[in-house]
Length: 379
Ligand code: CAA
Image (cartoon, rainbow, N blue to C red; front, side, top):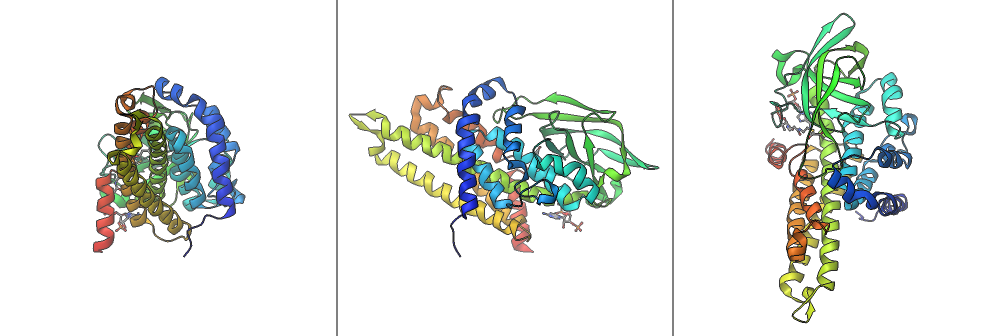
């Protein structure tokens, strides 16, 4: 067992860090305050190859692997978790299922431009009445000749309206429950496929979260992803990977909060000395660093298991649970260390705290992660 990253992974970390400092950091506050997604920035990340890290060269990727993508997501999240969330939604939830369940034609047509960073993807599972209970889907797809007719809606869709390619889940046989769900590939502009409300959010405001509306959308049968009835498994398998991405985001947010808090504790003087000289502060920093490192190790291990091709449902759930709880605790303590300044929007830690919260919620609440972990150990 060895814990060192290889040369390629270390170079990738430096490359992404440089991109984050040079291009991402300058507008991060503006995007958060203005609540807008920057497609230019996404395109720049795409041109660097970040959307193709875990896909084969034949489909526009570099084959660097899952762990490499996780390292890139972590680095980006240290500066702007919104951009990492948009990238991860496209790569892990839209591109990954196309790579693993798509036909050769679907991979060439949809995956390649996404992996090359020329298009943006989205994953549409959640509905108003199908959140944690993902099987309670009301969107339907009815086979009519060579097409399916899609009707329904989706909410809370990351990249909704901005993405060109969508993996959409719909019931093809509602009476079969989880075995009646199917996955489809949709493209922006299909007649009947429109966009509804854009969410106004607590955090990750530089990413778009929007409603999708389907009114008699005619989907060619060739756009079925995988087999009819395989949709629930496709969604769960994609979310296994997505959850490692959320864990990586949480680790990046936690690292940023720890760095800011440690820097502030060294510089801020009260009672004639740096506040870091008080054990009340330095022990907080020690606990933050320890918790962060534990979360990072779980995250990298889950990514490694995914790279080996094994079932990583339990490892991914553990990584997301531990890392998101760590990010929430670390950002809360960072705000505390900054005192009144931490509560001010002039300083970055309040934004990190707001961004951390979603990592405990999306891609399965932490209560769902406990269900997944418990079911794996009680099997
Ligand atoms: N991989 C492959 N198959 C899986 C699987 C996995 N990780 N997990 C479950 N399955 C299979 C099961 O083996 C079972 O198969 P069989 O029918 O052959 O037996 C089938 O799926 C049904 O499994 P369950 O009985 O466990 O399903 P359930 O209805 O009890 O649900 C759940 C379990 C864990 C609660 C699941 O519903 C869940 O994960 N819910 C949360 C959904 C979620 O994460 N939503 C987030 C959406 S994305 C988002 O946040 C927004 C965005 O834009 C990013």
